[in-house]
Each structure stands twice: as C-alpha cells, then as structure tokens.
Image (tube, rainbow over all chains, first blue to last red; front, side, top):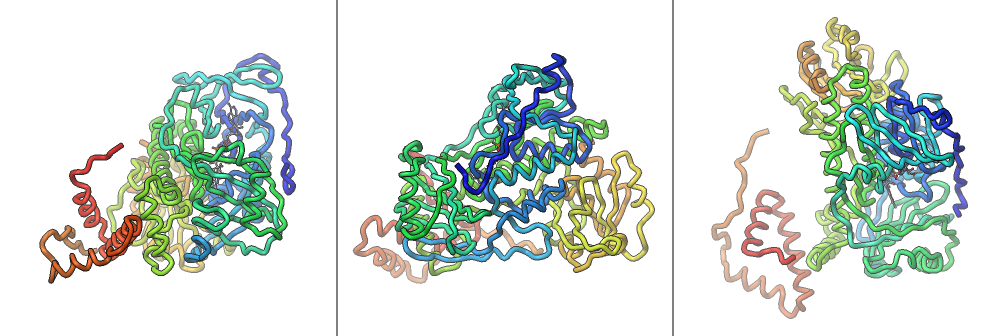
Length: 541
Length: 73
Ligand SMILES: Cc1cc2nc3c(=O)[nH]c(=O)nc-3n(C[C@H](O)[C@H](O)[C@H](O)COP(=O)(O)OP(=O)(O)OC[C@H]3O[C@@H](n4cnc5c(N)ncnc54)[C@H](O)[C@@H]3O)c2cc1C
C-alpha cells in the first residue's frame, strides 16, 4: 500500500506470566502503544519506573494520521531524548496561504520567535513519530516492556490496584497494576469497560484525508482553500510531510458516502482536478473521517488514569490531538513518581485531572471554533464566514478572524491548585502555571539550552544579585524532594540575555519550576521558607 | 497598569442627525436581494465590531439585540 514507507512488524512474544500462569503485580501498566502510551512509557522509564505497555497490534499507526507537532510536545520529547530524529526527518513551513474561489485571499508568515531549541512545529507522518518513540524505548531495556498483540479485554478497577484480562495469540492471562494509564485511543475499550461517559459534539461533516506522493514544485507552505474551483462548496487543505508525501484534506459535506469516497477511482479525479492533469502523483493512503470534539467528565478513576485520545478527542483543525496528549503524560508522570515514592500525597494525582481537564476544555474550545468557521452550521454562520473572507482580501482586521485552524499551543494552568499566586509584580508571560520558555545558555562554558538544564526535576531559577549562591538555596538540593538551583549569572550564563528577558529577571528574582517545566511560583527575592511552602503546595501537601 | 472605568454600551442618543443615518442605512440596501442584504449586514457588524473592539461593549450589544428571541431548536 504505502510506497514510501515499509511498516515494521514487531515480534509477538508469549508473556512469561501467561506461560507460568502467575498473576504478577506491576508498578505501572499502560494500555495502548500509540504516541501517547509510548510517551508515557518513556517518561516513567526516565524516572526509573518499570512499566508494561499492552498493545493489541504489532505495528505503528496505519496511514499517517497526525502530521503536525508543535513546539511544546517536541520539547517534551527532547526531555525524553527522542526529539532529534523527529526534527531531522520532519519538515517545517512558515508561509501559509488562504485561497477563496480562484483567488489568494492573503498569506501569512508565522515568524516564529528565534532562540528556542525546538522549532515552532514540524510536519511528520505519525508512523515515523511512533517508530522513533519505540526506538527510544529500547534504550531503557527491561524498564519498558512493550507487549505487542496483547489486547485488554476486561478491566477491574479495584481501590488498591487495577486488574486486566489480556488476550494474546496464545490465549488469555491476567495482570495487576499498582497504577494504570489507559492510552488506548478515541475508541478506548478501557473507557467502555468502565462505562465512563465520553460526551461532546459530533460535527455533521466528513473529510477525505489523502496522502499523495509527488515531486511537484509546490513550495513548502500550508495552503487552505475555501470553495476552490476544483472542489466547489467545500474546503481543501494541502500540507507537506517528509519523503515528498503531501497531505490533502477534502471537506466532503455530511451527505457524502464514506465507503464510496474512499475508492481510488473517486479520489484520483479529485486530485487531478486539484493538482492539474499533468502533475504526476501516486496515492499512498486515504481515509474518510467524521470529526468530534468530546471528552470524559474526569480523567482519573482511582488508580486508573486516562490520557490522549482516550480521554479527549478533538477535530484535527489546529493539530491538537497528539500535541495535547503528550502534555497529559508530561503532567502525570512526575506526579506518579512522587506518589509511588511516598513523597507526595495521593491527592497530588487529583491535580492531573484538574489541570488536564482544564487544558482539554481549552483545546476543545479552539478546535470547535475552527470547525465552526470551516463548517458553518447555519445560514447566518455561513453568511458571517463568507463576509469575513470577503473583507479579509482587503482588510487586515478581518484576516485575524479567518480561522482555518490555529496552531496548538500549551494551555497555562492559570488557576491550578498547585500554583502559588504572585505576590510580587512581574511583566511578561511566565506566570505561575505556564510552561517554561526556552533560551540559549552556557553551563560550564558549554553552549546549551535552558530547558535541557531544567530537565525533569524540581528546579529553582535564581537571578544572581552578584553576592553568590545563597547557602539556603544550595541546601534545597538535599531536601526529601530535591530542588536543584540554576543560578543565572552563577552556574548558568545567560548568553543572549534572553532568560532575563523572557522571565523578567532582576537581581534576586526566584522561580520555582515543576518537573514538567511549568512555573510553580516566583518572587522578586529568594526566601527559603517561601520556596519550601510553594514546593509543598506544588506536590499537593 | 492604570484601571480605566469599565466602558459600557452607550444607549443614549449619539447621532448628530438620526434621520440622515437611518436614510443612509436603508439606502445601503436599496435594490439588493435578501441574500445580498444579509451579506452587507454581516459586513457592517464585522466592521463596526472591530472599530469598537471592546468585548464587554460588544457583548452587551449582542445580548440586547437577542432579547426576546427564544432559540427555535
Ligand atoms: C486525519 C487525522 C489528522 C490528525 N492530525 C493531527 C496533527 O496534525 N497533530 C496532532 O497532534 N494530532 C493529529 N491527529 C490526532 C492524533 O492522530 C491522535 O491524537 C493520536 O494518535 C492519539 O494518540 P493516542 O496514543 O492517544 O491514541 P492512538 O494513536 O489511537 O493509539 C491507541 C493505541 O491503543 C491500542 N489499543 C486500542 N485498544 C486496545 C486494547 N483493548 N488493548 C490494547 N491496546 C489497545 C491501539 O492499537 C493503538 O495502538 C490527527 C488525527 C487524524 C485522524
């Protein structure tokens, strides 16, 4: 089927527990080896927590689903040591064009801010993404035990453990977990087995998603058409991926027959009309989707957590699914570690639900807004949409209203119970609950990046006032939950002054940073008692 | 940041010449089909809303405009 990509086939191995008939209690079991389950596994592994990943299949995502990954998930994957191959293989774009009928309405340049290690986003086929994640898992040896062809067929959610019944080619076996994370996708079986709610909005529209190989000299830009001559009354999106594979989304309308539309004899003429009779191309993969925006009412059920598409599903406008799912696991992994180690109360795990439900709602809102613009649901909504597009051709203000999908950006946990609200005055964006901005730094004379030095534990960023590192700051390293200090103007050189800029640093300014690289608290001067109080708050004490 | 008093929608007469305005509004739609007029009205709303820019004021206006109408589905 795919000409540019050969699907790896991962070997099935009979699980030892199935051979021995013993029921073993694991520390952590992850259901689903998609991008979110694999990222979760890596995040547990870097913290030294062994886990089992159960997947009912034995390969990566069939067909490229997700295409576009934003900076924040790339930063998370960089923390986990696997962003480099993604960025190398992925393609970037900066120019977007919006067309209507035969004409260009306007074009925009994303002008991403310089001096971040990770790009604003990349386009990359989902199967590559998953392949790189699986490759990285291998570096952790036995810590990540991926079991292909292991399908969860029932779950019992007990107060002190979760018990799974699993089907393999050799039959059925059982396994227990101290903690379990269901990352089994939008059709989550685990969610179904729990009888948990998954509600929201289905859009009365269908989309044909096609991957096409072509060596056309289209520039590497994002092109979006409203009502193009080659597909009247609907919208079309063209995006480049790696290996000369192009993603084309055709809006089909609600009455389209998915089975019919999927047939090559139906797709090829559409593509020819779009690309021109003379353009040589090959159809790699196509599928028809109806999109939905919905979520579970909560993401925590005792010792069982939901993450990724299993917990929330968004329409792909603005590329939010995998992007936001990775931030689920980023949020959960360090909390699980602290609770497993007895260093934080169980209630810390409730903040996963609090923070990620809040983020899911933000994503759902953004994605619903884009969908409403692309697929107006009433005559008046279409009238406003078309009026906006008309005005956009001439007037800048209306361009800001054109919504063909907004790029995914992380949701700051502005009201999180883990934050210590500001008591001092600050400028800029780094308020408590916000993910940390990157900046170039030098440590021990070696050029590097702030986020890499933040890594995955609690940190203090302290802007030196010239009198050296306060002893009480250095002592935080030996606390039960250790806090390492990055002293700007001390052990860390702010090469371009951008840490100071982006964090509004003045001599004495102190930030407490969570292991998921979010700001927990900040002050204009260092006070060990305040840092300790904020740390306790950030770990749910 | 200094706090301006919250702006509210001006519901007091504000036209120098109300009849001029009204005539010009109707004139704008002269000879247009219902669909064309709907387009003109939509553009007017967008242009004026951007000019006002203040979400609080716009929300007040939208609420008043909708008063008395029940959703039909
Ligand atoms: C057309 C399209 C375009 C998209 N574009 C983007 C984009 O540009 N950017 C973006 O971020 N997102 C995008 N998405 C969304 C993205 O693909 C999903 O959000 C992402 O795949 C979710 O990952 P996941 O790991 O939660 O679930 P999935 O990828 O669905 O993985 C679930 C895994 O669980 C396994 N599983 C299921 N049931 C069981 C069971 N009972 N036992 C064991 N294993 C099981 C499955 O085999 C699968 O491997 C797009 C989606 C579509 C359809």
